[in-house]
Image 1: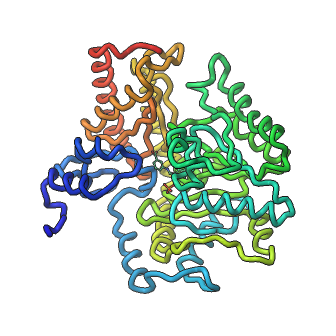
Image 2: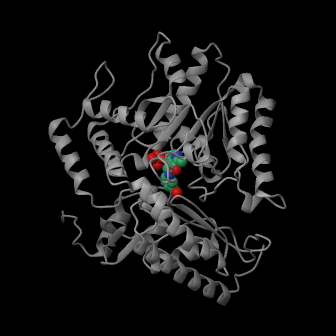
Image 3: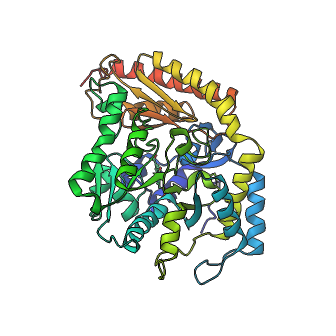
Length: 466
Ligand code: PXG
């Protein structure tokens, strides 16, 4: 068989990819006809593809490569750890230094009394763990009927049976019998699309109070927890109105419901603090982490657990019957620990707060003057713009949702910028180390793409409101 390397022609790589590699969240036959874009290299915020094009990665991979690509330091740590101890389990009364050191570091960085880390290999796995944790907690507390977890429509919490059930994505629920029992969904705090004539503040309260209504409807003796992303990521970088999280917190406190903050995207500096819970003043019992924990250099995730939940389960007199082969994988843990140290040593979070966010904010907000753009949102380095045919009424397009967003994303691809679309919202989440001149390149390419998209919509008669 031919050795498959970067040196094969793109067409041949695409043919082999289509023949043997089934892609996530993809209509594979359609992709096979088009051919996947093949990425061969990454340095800083830049990717190179198999055609030699230099692409600015406005998404940090998939919201994860926060330190940027090509860090020798992290490669060396991985190599060293593989030689020292490539793997050992943490199941049968054993532990190892990378798992111990990373857990201690995460506990130091996490707010409040979130002092205990249960490892997973990904965000989805960590959220599956969370389902087990909160149900086990209430069972040990003598309230086995408290099993329901309340989430939101258009939330994303992963793609395993548990994670996909917690999420509120209709497309995921439509395949494979999800959601699993005792997971229910309330409305999302998406003012732009759903807020009607209300102010954002009024709408934020309204949507938060759906939680109270749901708890009342089910009975507090049935509800174990509420889970939410501080900012919905995959749902379109939806920043909740300022009134939303304080009201959610009040309701969880009032009814004694556990609060899970899914910080798989927002954790480790994305919003300008170590955790978005600090940015929004949320006091969770559990935080889900993954992605930025290792800047995507190794697959690792976990649940950071508060003292009360941990101690209750730890002192139950029985095992917590849950775990994954790769819980605390030594190579992934060593890489993640070094990643967190680098974030500290290089002052990456200060860079986000004091340099990258203020500069990007100025340029991002100016995009709202573009004829195709309604609102422009940015928290830390997580941003979105709403595309609309009519800003004043916040109208949706007459075309099927996502048609315009997809066209805009195609223009971004052509202009060598990775900017995603979710429906007709464009989103960015660049590496946290992005510099002002790279931000200029991002905005210039985004503006060109918006201009071209706008001209194309005009030419094709698609600038119509629904
Ligand atoms: N929670 C949140 C908030 C996420 O964003 C997960 C859990 C699941 O993590 P894993 O590591 O199991 O993928 C995520 C993942 C997208 C997209 O289209 C977003 C994610 C994953 C794949 C695609 O934006 N987020």
